[in-house]
Image (cartoon, rainbow, N blue to C red; front, top):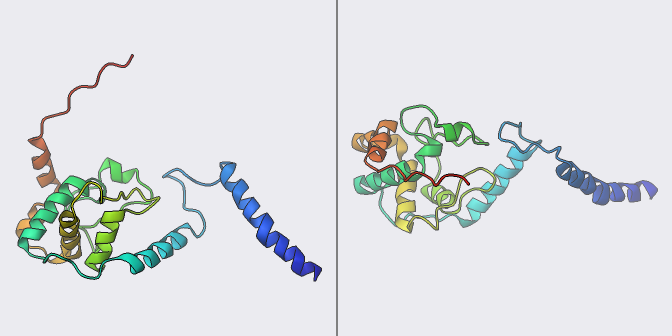
Length: 187
């Protein structure tokens, strides 16, 4: 009986207290260059999968066609490429400094093996502690679906859409934008 009580005390009090001390003492790895904590990836991934399974929409309200792919490519260039990269080219400086590393959505499998509703959920809500923001406040429902359908079908896009997803096409789009005004001098 004493061993059982000792186990309860250790399990319910000392282990959480030890974890609390671990985090508050600054021993937990928090920089993007640090190795992940034990079980960090597994726990985060399982929680994300369960939540998406419960909430992700099952059907897209728009059709995956040339027009929606082109509109999705525009959204991708403006909001996604800086972290997730383009069809060609190297990672941006922003992507290189992120932890966990953002997936390259237009190279390899990307998210073409995910249902569009799963990608839509990630675009709309973001993913905590990954750097992936939620775009529900800045993009329309249609725009979020367009980019989600684009990514779900990235392996079978028409060539005209693929050409619009290169780093060169992004540079052309931003070269016509006037540079920001210089900042006020520091006082």
